[in-house]
Length: 150
Length: 150
Image (cartoon, rainbow over all chains, first blue to last red; front, side, top):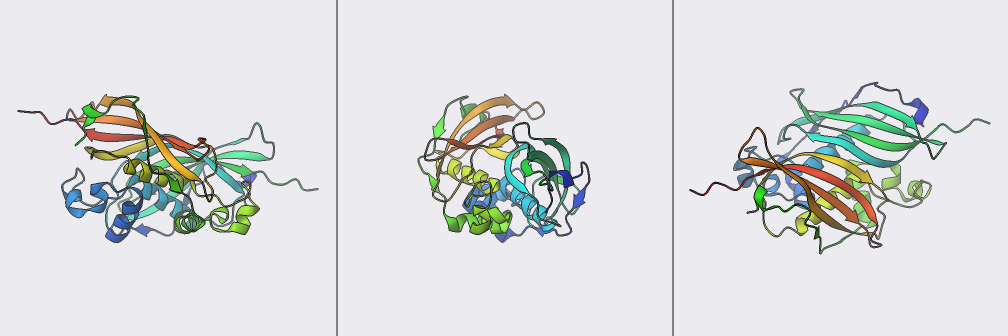
């Protein structure tokens, strides 16, 4: 089990897996959660600013989470997510794009009110097959400190 | 079609629909996008800080998007999402919770580089059946200005 103390600031991890976006997955995800015409209809997408089908921001962040899980070596003592900061979408994610994740702990501090817990900020970058950053964001999480050994 | 000029600052909209969280939907969404043990396994959830199954932050934001779509009166001339700010998770969202959305435009400005476009910031609040805020966040979007009438 990985506790607060086990996370090293600035150590970058890369996902070995990548996630290739398909037309079917984009349309299926967006129909349910973000049915903008340019996410679910190829004709509307062709007439959009991007000019072709691209997926929802929501889906991009969900893929980031999935890829982050794929590279976990060991279960962490994470309690809950507190929030996200600076969620930025730089490029559209389109059919055929192969996304992967680079992440690192960008800040950590002990909880002021809960002496057995700490707060980690992880920065997540989603990159495509051209090594361009599609999206980036920070996840702030509450995590247990290592239990005292008696 | 609703353009940049048509959005009024501070005007609150409430979703008529609500989204009731089921065990099946939580497990199915989280298995695919955020398979933390406490999101996909009831025994692990019972042993967690929350003490029962609760869903992923990602799923909560996706539900916010779905509910926001449900209350749209008219299609908007939105081009793309630029980013999200101050994404906060205040309470766990659990089986049986009934979520609804309250949203308003909290900032708007003209684009400096693109004279035909503007930038809207929408604040989204997700409330549960007790009127408590489960999550809130701001969505920053690029939107077309009204076409010039010749």
